[in-house]
Every structure is written in C-alpha cells, then in structure tokens.
Length: 260
Length: 236
Image 1 (cartoon, chains in turn cyan, blue):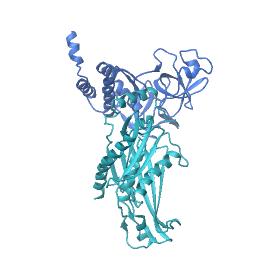
Image 2: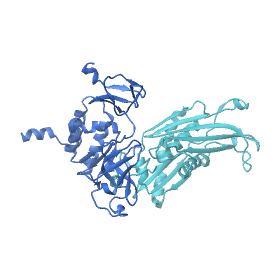
Image 3: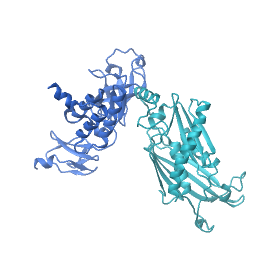
Image 4: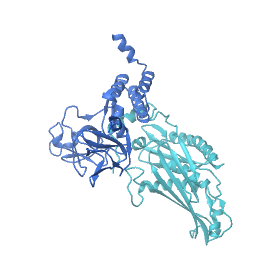
C-alpha cells in the first residue's frame, strides 16, 4: 500500500519548519525520548530493544563458528540484515528485502564495520579455517521515522551486551564480546533549507535530502551516507558533522549507563 | 433486568457470549446456535433492540452515512480512489461529485494528495466502500492541517451535544471538522491551530479522566489568554 500524506498537511509542515518549529514542539536539532533495553531476547547472544519516540526496533545477535572469507583468512565475519515488515508500517510489504531495507542494513553495518567496533582479528579462532560469524538481525516493530539512528543505537547496545558462546563450541569459557569503540549514527534530514534531527514519519515523507554521520568516542567520522535526491551545501555538511559529534557524545553517555 | 445494569460499561472479549435477552445482533457481534457472541474487543451497548460492540481500538470500520476525511491515492478517467483510514479503499465516482466532470478530466478537479470531506454512501458485505461528495458541506479541503486520532475517541472530541468541539472552536478561532474516521481537520491562525491540536491530543490521552472538559477549558484559557465565561457575563 502506498503511504500518502495529504497536500494540506504537507503545506502545514513546510510552514512550521520554515519558522523553525516542529509537529511535536521539539527544536529542529532535538531528539525524541530514547529508551534502551538490553538482553531482550533470551535465546540470542546479545540483543537490545530501542524506543525512539514511537519508533520501535529490536536487534538480535547470534554467533556461530564457520569459515572465513578467502581474502580475509584471519578476520571474523559480520552479516547484517534488516526486516521491514508490514507490522511496522502499511507501506512495507512482506517478501525479499527491498532497496530501503538493504540500505538500512548497509548504513548501520558500515558504521560498526568501519568504526572497528569489534576487533575482527580477535574473532579469528584458526587462521583460514575457523572464525566467529556474527549475525545481526534488525527487526522493525513500529516505524515512526529515523530508523537509521534507532537501529544504529540498538545494534551498538546489543553488541555491548553480547556474550560469545565459546562453551557451546568447546572453545573454552564464555566471554563478553570485546567492544573497542562506541559508534553511533545520527541522521539529519533537510526540508526546505532547514536541517533537522530525528525526524518523525510525516517529516521524513516530505524531506528533500538525508545525511547520516556515524562518529566514535574520539570524534572521528567513521561512516557517512547521503540519501534522497536533494543536496547538502558544504557549510551544512560541516555543521551536521559537528552536531553529530555533540549528539553522539550524549548518546554514548546513555549507552555507557546500560553497560555498567 | 434493572436499568442500571443495562447501561453499565461492560468490556467483552471476542467470543464472549452476550447474555442479553430479546435483542438482535448488531455491529461487532455474530450469532451462532441462537446465541449472540462478541466479535471484537470492546464495550457493549444496547440501543433500539440491537446489541452492539464498540471496538476499543483499531482502524476505522466504515459505516453508511458517516462523514469522513479522505486522502486521494489514485485517479483514473472516471473514479478517484480514496484512503479513508479504513483497511479498505473507498471509491469516489464522477457522478458523486458536485461538478459535471468530462470523461478523463478527473485530475483537474481532484488530484492525488488532495484531502476531501466526503460521506460514506454505501458499504457492502465485502466492505467495498462507496463515497459521495454531492451534498451540502462536503468539499475539497484547501488549507489547514489534518491530524489523526483513534476512531474510537471521536465521540470524546465532539463531547456531549458538541460541547467539547464548540469550546475548542471558540477559544482557538479555528474551523474544526471531526471526521468519524478519526481524522480531524483544523484551520485558522497558526497559534490557534497549535493550541487546538495540543488540546485534541490532551483529550485523546486523557479520555477516561473525570472532569476532562474543565481541564481542557483551563488549558485553553491559559494558552489563548481568553476567558469566555467572563465575556459571557459581561454581555449579560
């Protein structure tokens, strides 16, 4: 089913955003309430459920022992997939993943992979033969905009909560997955020259351009993704990056809390 | 059965038997082996010989005669497809609009994305919905905004004999129309719209609270700086 927003609602949103206001009274660069619960799925090695306003996602992590890729014989493997099911929003249909689901999985995956959150070399058991495989599954339960950030935060929280099931594979005692960095993505949407953070569904539907910036605790940019057909100017991009570091630090504080 | 029990709010689960005598099965119920059962989760009401179950949540269940707000999702040469917030699409035929539309000229009257105020003229057994715009007051909506609430809360927004809705209109200087499908159209000065929308959300969240009308009036008075009661007294 096509999700459609009526023209008058669109016009109203444009007028609000032009004045720097938003539907729910937030500032343009203000996030919604974030709630992180870890260990949500008992049978998974690590899991987290994240509520970002009305957006609701679950990330689960399973680990297994398998063969590495031939070109990276001493590195563990991470495979990320996302499911956008009709339960989350009527605009999604069941069946093989489409472009939006693939992009979501890739962008979230890139932040974790390029940010070297896990030291993949530590996931090697025997060079060229046996490594740990990390399967990441992202499930969207309710879609109210900004899946990139919700999934990115949920995945980070799930990784911090993961216990490597070594005992099951007769490789010694279970131990927590070594997490080297804390990477969180922040996604900016541009609507008519105004840039805003953590959009809701209606705002996402009228956006011209999207920019995801993932940063780590040192303030390094580890991944970026630009989406939609609009453009970001140079200054806008720089300010997004600066803002991303600031918001990333706040998110990392919240993530640290659940770790302890 | 005494009158008091008859009007008590009774929550039923799907499949619950309704022990009411001398009534016919109405909306949200079904009959099996001469007994009436609830088909939905909701509150039981008895009205003019029929027992009905009003659903507590969920999408809009279309009903003949309801005035609703729809969004046009598709246009072809003789019909418009309209989303009326129900699980089923509604069809608006060129014969049911107030203009004489030439074949194939539909797009110049109503286009995809337009919001329209329509009446449900027929719903058949397969939930095929026919809607009509050929009646006084029904039209295309050009300004303002649309917000959505749960269809079950619509009577709350309207209030007893329209008390809540007229209070909202008076305080905010807005034009408000509440569609039975849970879509509410609000038009007027921007500040007024903002207050009206906040008040509607407040009503929806606190639907079961006692003394809600007074709380909403208090809020409106604070936000708009108006005191209608005082003005009323002055006039006297």
